[in-house]
Image (cartoon, rainbow, N blue to C red; front, side, top):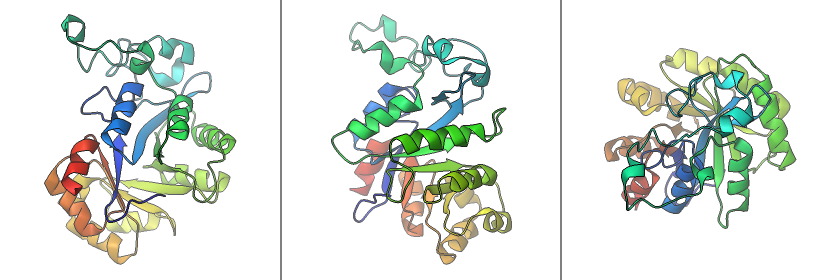
Length: 262
C-alpha cells in the first residue's frame, strides 16, 4: 500500500459519491480530479460472470430499472441509466455539461482497473466483495483471476480486498497469499473482532462503531493493527481517525478531507 507522507491515505468511497452518482465512471473521474489517493468500490457478479461495481443486491435504488444484479447479464446492466437518480432534473438544466454516456452507466470492475492502471499518477483500489451472494466463492475466485492477469496479486500491488466476511477474505488469501485484505467491522464486539482477524489482516472499523465503542479503536491500536476507517465525512470524524493513527480514511468527499488534512 502506498501511504502519503504525514497523513492517511484518502480513499474515495464509491468515487466522489457526494458529488456524483456512486460507482459510475463520472464519480471515479471526479475523485481522481479531487486528488484521491485510492478508489473504493463494491463488486457483485452478474449472471454471465462479470464483476460490476454495484453496492446493493438489487439495481432499484441506483438505476432506472428493477432486478437482482445476480440474475442479470452484463448486456442488460450496460443499458441502464445509473446516474439520473442522483440529479433527476439535469435534463432541464440548460447549463449542465453534456458527458459521454459511458460515464453514467453501470461500471465494470475491468473498466475501473483500466482507469487506475493507465492514470499518470499513483492510484490504488480498495475492492469490497459483497456477501451473502448466490455465487459464494466464485466472487473471490473471479476477482483474484482478474487481478492476476494484471500482475496485481503479489506484494506491493496497488489493490486490496475488503469484506465483512472473514470467510471471503480467507478465500482471497488462499488464492493470493500476499494480497492485502481488510476485515470490515460493524457491530462486532472486540472479542469477536479479535477472533475473526487474521494475523496480518488490516482492521476496517466503521466510524460509527468507533464513536459508539471507543475501546475498540484503542484495542485495535494496542494490538498493533493497521486501521482503515469508513465512512469519514466530517472534520470531527477525521480527527478520531488521526488520533488512532489510521492508515487510510474512506470518504464520500475526498476533496474536503484533503483540504482538512492540509
